[in-house]
Length: 178
Image (cartoon, rainbow, N blue to C red; front, top):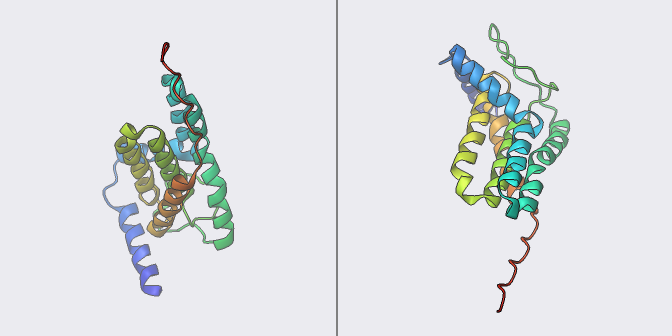
């Protein structure tokens, strides 16, 4: 188990200390704001409901998936109690609402949001998954989470996204004269 912990620490240090630029940091911070409390995923669900009135109920339901995933994530965080990483001479490049790290709430909510929205709008899956992946990669890049926090968040978010209930679409109206 110690070997995994050392590998996790080495990966975190590499992600936090290499390949940084002002644009990269601002981008990762922006993705962090998008993922904060699932707010960006809520916005995408609401936009989907506005853009596709015939699919409004499933999009509204999907909009709630990321914030609900945050609640599930927080119960795991409280149970595990792992503290956020600290790297000498490389402080985190963003703020966090708590000192708890495992699993990453941004990763959990982003993957859950992407999976549920992808179930409602299958054609958007590649873009949704890419966006969720970018949010996830940004967490250790900013020094906010160990990579294992992110992996656990992805797994939890994926499971929650697959299990999340969506309303059954209303049957299409019958054609006149049928």
